[in-house]
Amino acid sequence: QVQLVESGGGLVQPGGSLRLSCAASGSIFSRFNMGWYRQAPGKQREMVAGFTSGGKVNYADSVKDRFTISRDNAKNTVYLQMNSLKPEDTAAYYCNAQHTLLVGLNYWGQGTQVTVSS
Image (cartoon, rainbow, N blue to C red; front, side, top):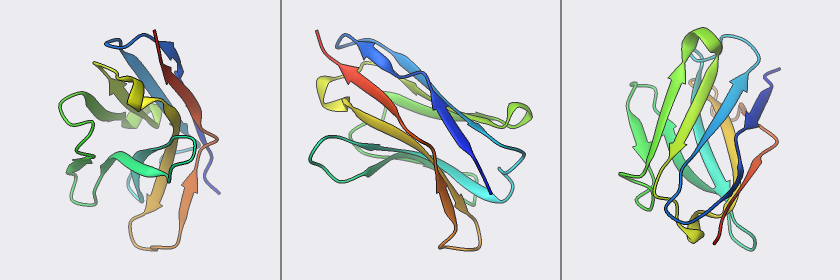
């Protein structure tokens, strides 16, 4: 069982920055691709940023050049640095761990709320 705990959400003004953290229960990065998703009220959950099995990073077009995903293997933690935040970035952000071989095996964190408003 993998546990993911997000933190770092909050209220920020447009143009501001936040850094989200996702702490995993153990050294899972070699077996799981890590990513961030978000879900706004009334909308479907969407991928924001994520690592691929080849070590590359994918970003949603809406966040390219503003958000950066990174990870600290020693701390079993994945980060999402969010800059130049916009009101449309307001959503619950979820950390996801997708097994690299077993497509149906993935885990979610409990989510952290990000609200961008003046």
